[in-house]
Image (cartoon, rainbow, N blue to C red; front, side, top):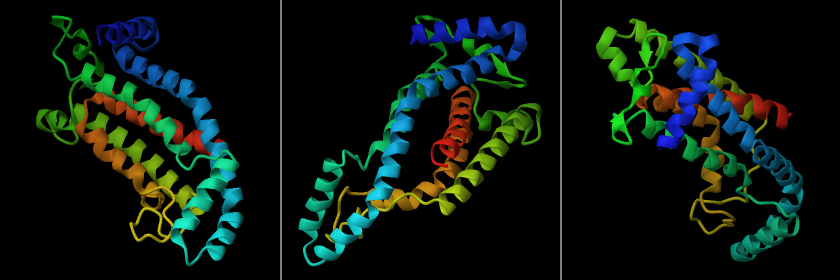
Length: 241
């Protein structure tokens, strides 16, 4: 973790002439952007996979009609179709999974009072009036909702709410392709990937859960989440147009 701390500190030093006291916060935003650039090829592959799955829907519908009385055979036929067309039902989850280590590194980095036996100097950095190692509860006890630190969180909540609303409206307008009927319900009526049907239904609401994440994690990790979700919204608007 000390190596990661040094990376953040070096980025903050580079950005200090431009951002002054908020250089560490800017470094986290830049770090997030670099992570998203690295993951972007997976996001493009996920977009291609979703378009391919959408194109397969007529053939899957035909398989449903053909094997309506045999759920097990329907499951095998759909999986074989995905394999034949080299389409993975779970490819859309890879970009999110690959980002999790970076998020948890930031979380632990700004939750630790010491690194390598020395005081964690990164905890002294702030985003305006809000320390990067504090949480929303600290802002509430320190000055209240409309205190100096509280206003920083209100701004982040506003950004997350705007991005979540954009994602929700777009997901309703361009829904994700659904798996065969019964997927993930445990009903035995054609499960292809257990839980995929539930995921498809929940996905439009996932961005709103980010509000809870921003409220409970250290501000540095919240900045990562806000930057990443905003990037995702813009990326999806371009890749899935």
